[in-house]
Image (cartoon, rainbow, N blue to C red; front, side, top):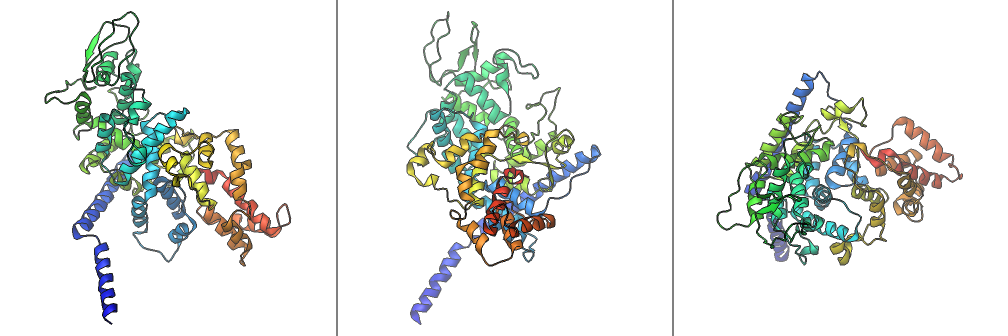
Amino acid sequence: MRLRLIGACGLAALLVALQPTPSSAQDSSDAKARSKALAGRIDKLINKRLEEEKMKPGARASLAQVARRLHLDLAGKIPNLLDTRDFLDPTNDSPNKLEDRIDQLLSEETYARNFAHYWRTVMLQNSNNQQAQIFQFQFENWLRDRLAKNTPYDKMAYEVFTTQNFQGGGPNNASPGVFYQVNENKAENLAGATARVFLGVKIECAQCHKHPFAKWTQTQFWEYAAFFSGVAPRQPVQGQPNQPFNPNSKEIRIPNTDTVVQAKFITGDQPDFAGNKSVRTVLADWATSPKNPYFSRAAVDHVWQYFFGVSLMEPIFEPTDDSPPAHAELLDTLAQAFVESGFDLKFLVRSIVLTDAYARVSVAMSEDSKLDIQMFAKMPVRGMMPEQFFDSLCEATSFQDNTFSNNQVQQFGPQPNSLRAQFLSRFASQDKKTETQTSILQALYLMNGKFLNDRCKLENNESLRTIATQNTSTERRVETLYLMVLSRLPRPEELERLSRYIDSGGGTGDARQAVADVYWALLNSSEFMLNH
């Protein structure tokens, strides 16, 4: 009895320890309430614009479609069979079902891995060079660590601005200094990249001449580039005397001219270098300040584009007096809320996916649907990131991808001959997710490639073999295949047609092989390949 009492007391203590403290529970509750409030304001602003344009918002997408969209957008892959069944279970009628699923996905490791893929594509230029790909993977490791800790976005950006040297040897050889390496430690490259990523301004267009559509001048570009003039020795310009290298230089010579300009913010304001601060620390302090509207607007626009495929600043990326942001009030509302949250990315993501706009029915981009998508009356059909596509294929085919269990892979990325590397090399990221293009080689790889064909063989896929051989109805087999691959139940006409095909034995006269045929067809369907 005494031992049982001690065990019970120990279990009780453990359960108490696992409960969130009142303050942390209160903080979590407050954050969720603020997210719901912001979601409401977003919908109000969008609906107001729709009324002004005399447009009707699209219908709400099906529960299955919203669940699949959430898993792809937050976890980076389709839901597994049990997650789909649980979400669609009619007995699970909790009014908080959607919110609970969002919080669950935001708390899992897959959230950090998925958004590390995305932020890496935003911050770094893609390259087929093997060394550059190693750098990109190491940068992604750093992003994943920061996202898993929900590091405030301003702190992450500050690290990128100020970590000039590549500092390997940390966890998985991760370092934000890769940003400088990928941009070749060139002042002009770093100026263009930091302005585009962290300020939402394509100022590099003014590198050689005045920007044709905006106010940026060549002098402004090089004044901003002067913050990076001390990163590495610049190559001498023919016909000009060599300049001594100064790692804390605050000036730069405009190429092919005798003009030397001093470091200055793109707003035209003079930086204050008092206190012996380094040049890039002064720049980082200004760039990531809560008072800098360029920084917060650029950040929320990156996140918004990820979910909606449309910039809040379109048609021209950066706002000007002649071409203001397309959704100025919505952009400012999101930016202000993001600043007030302490640059909390999970808060911003949760707020967006809680909106009615996010849960609307989707349409493919076309001339007829373009305005609906730009005004957020409907969601666009989007292409997946290559990593999302591969991980979804692994989920749908019950394939265990052990790529990252190897220490060398964790540091340097997948080996070129690995399944993941081969797949990613064929399905590169595309800038416009709403205008996804596929090639004949990609289609052939999916239809005839060894990986997918092996996973569609009964002897290689235990889950598929169970579906094909278990003592159950044909209709049940078809329903399970649809839930595994498309994350929904088949429509009546689909169920009837495919059940008839399986019962007839398909092309081989073997009902079990016919199940595999249906499985292969679903995996090669556009419905599986796209995020809708």
